[in-house]
Length: 48
Image (tube, rainbow, N blue to C red; front, top):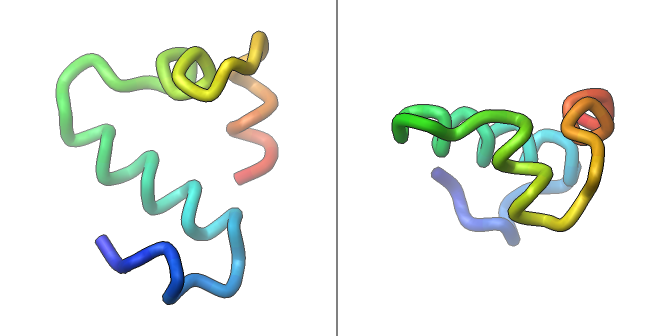
C-alpha cells in the first residue's frame, strides 16, 4: 500500500486501507468502524 502522503483523496486511502486489511481474515466494515470508534459500519462504507 502507498504511503498516506501520496494520496490526494482521503476516500481513496480509506478504500485502499480497507482492501488491504480485508486480506486479513476477520476484517469487515464493522471491525473497521469499531477500530475508529464509529457506531455505524455503514457510515464508513458510504464515505468510501
